Image (cartoon, rainbow, N blue to C red; front, side, top):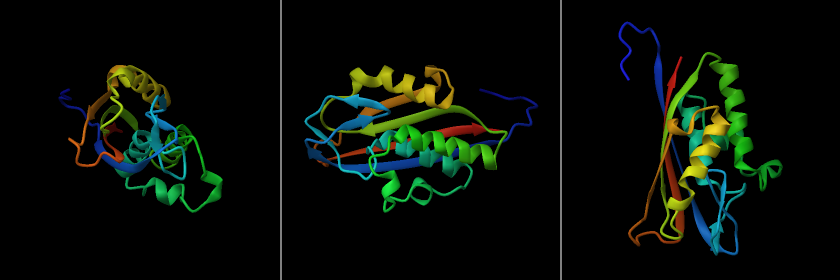
Length: 163
């Protein structure tokens, strides 16, 4: 995208999150429940993709991270739906950078098993819904650790923001 003569200001936000996996726990990625015998060990619902997204949005405007706004030691956030965290971060952005817009989201999730490819469109649609974007503005890719870290899941997210 080229903006000739544009006076828009752009910012890039980056976020990353990882959680250990354990048997019998739920696995939620990008707001989508995943069929798996292993899920995340976390204070909230452990959605690494939405956590990394929330951190990326905050980082884009130098507003801290989700641990600062949603401390893991606070029992009020135990088991919290990570979609609520993303919605809360959008409120924070509205308060500090009211004229912002999200141009696009690029995300990568690393997980050895199960394969996440079949869930891609659901994740894109859910993230797009949370951010009031079109699914084409949300890119989600999947990687494995090549056996290096089979007991964890990790997500990395970059966002392009305009004001």
